Image (cartoon, rainbow, N blue to C red; front, side, top):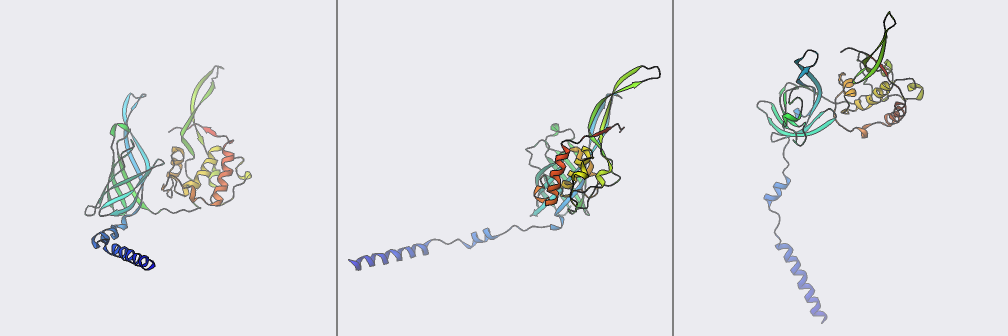
Length: 301
């Protein structure tokens, strides 16, 4: 009986081995397909192209009762990540919004056609051409009636993003928040003692304190910030994010940092890039921003 059991086990083992041998192996054709990696090409064109995003809106003036062309200039960055078989992949970054795009590259004409997904009303197509280290061309909205300016021009320069804790606003910068005007009731008394009231629109204004404090390099103390204006504190805080390439949604901050020659928006979240010192300073600045007051003044523009 023992001999029969041993014979049965031996036959079962042989059957298993034969089954394994008879199992078809992966063909060399399939193996080669799986191992093929699509080659990347034109890597010299990879990188960040940043600059002006220009559109013209036809606006009606109540004062002159005429239409006029209002030229609006914004900042945009196109990031080309990969080119494979003339297919292009990357992102557009503007106004705090990052949108993926894909398209085609014509190596003969050195031109790109790049399409954003199309599931957002602000999506569109970029048709741009390389000129040395620049990209020039146009953007056209997919949904032309959904946006104020459906056609815009682009003139972008290729730049390398660099984090530098020394970056500051230029000392000739205009320290006015043009995006948040506020109406004030003013009184005027003439020579005869007659008093009239009128409404005057004023804007927040920062002080020169924004040129002396750097929250990326020095530890910010209560003594440093207790007498600063609210806008001062906001600029000092957001300079930290600007140095890391944060793409601001708020027009106020975009206007300040886009006036520099170093600011390049590359991401809508840079929290993981902040240094321990920067994180500590932001906590301090946030505490004082809550209670700080603004100074308003009137300006013509």
